[in-house]
Length: 141
Image (cartoon, rainbow, N blue to C red):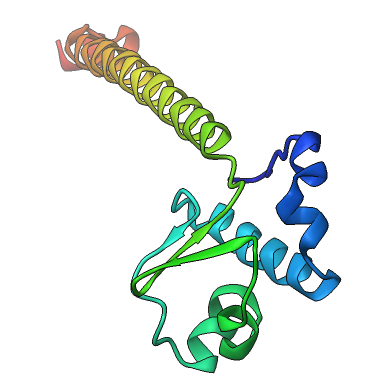
């Protein structure tokens, strides 16, 4: 997603009020990375990731993400980001799909028009070649 919309009321939630600023920062970095990856706020199999893998994903070290955080929830080896805007992601994906479909339809239609024009131009060229020429035709007679 290009934008991540967050509902303001989540910031008055108990979990946010309990979180330290470093936990909020960690949550935000992971949330934005999930938004870029469009993974619905769920990172699968990441519990054993190395520092390099975490740095590539969200710019954090493994110990920062693995530290207790009321805004991140571990489910076995998977990480769920609390308050992830899943509805916004679904809307963004649906809008993108609609735009792609409209572009595909427009591309097909314009391609058909180009082929029609090319065919008409080709036919006109063939007709022009078959028509007798003025002076050239008289010389040959």
